[in-house]
Amino acid sequence: MLICLAEIEFESWFIAAAESLAGCERLPLGLSRPANFEKIRGAKEWLSNQIEGPYKYKPTANQAALVQHMDLALAREHSHSFRRFCDRFRALLAG
Image (cartoon, rainbow, N blue to C red):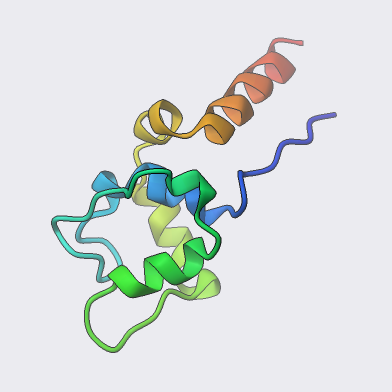
């Protein structure tokens, strides 16, 4: 069995790979992650504040597209919790 959670929020993994999401789902082309992003309380709100125009981030509407575009290697490089998830998942597959 594998149990592994994102630090604070699932969306913090999107922020870890922010550069790869630039231009996706109305996120600006110059998108970059802030310092200490894994400690942000309100990662959903951070994403909403980055979206251009009157739109807001909605998990049910935006998560699938963001997951498809996010660079997993970039998320792994910058997010301790995502790296832990990847390592544990790999160990689970190895048996």
